[in-house]
Amino acid sequence: MPREFSIAAKLDRLFTQVRAAGQGEISYMAVAEAIRAEQGIQISHTYIWQLRTGRRDNPTVQHLTGLAGYFGVPVAYFLDDDEARKIDGQLQLLRTLKDAQVTEIALRAADVSPSSRDTIGELVRKVWELERDRAKDDH
Image 1: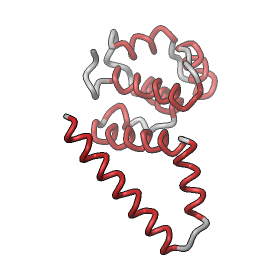
Image 2: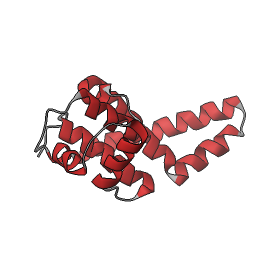
Image 3: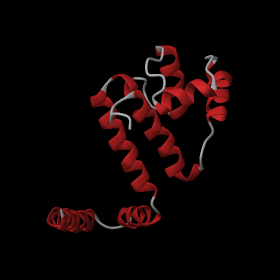
């Protein structure tokens, strides 16, 4: 099992994010071809697989730049654990926002008065706190 902030774990999270975004499983071949075609960086599908599985763990900055460009994250995602935590949180938020019910709530809230939006925000915060407290009690 790769360490939480190893290159392998970070790359796995990016691959998982693509799948979670409803884009299906993406092949190592497709990633390598896109990086070569769009960025001119030579990288093989086997090498990407080796990085994701932890069989290789010391990629060049050029390869990290290519992977970061492909997945739309800054190269610092791979180099700085604090940056990775921040970006992982942002990716989680994006996944949540893509949920149809969350989007519907946001769209409907946009059409109400500012004071009503404040009330909606307060209600959401209260529900979040209740669920968080319930989860703590379950553990």
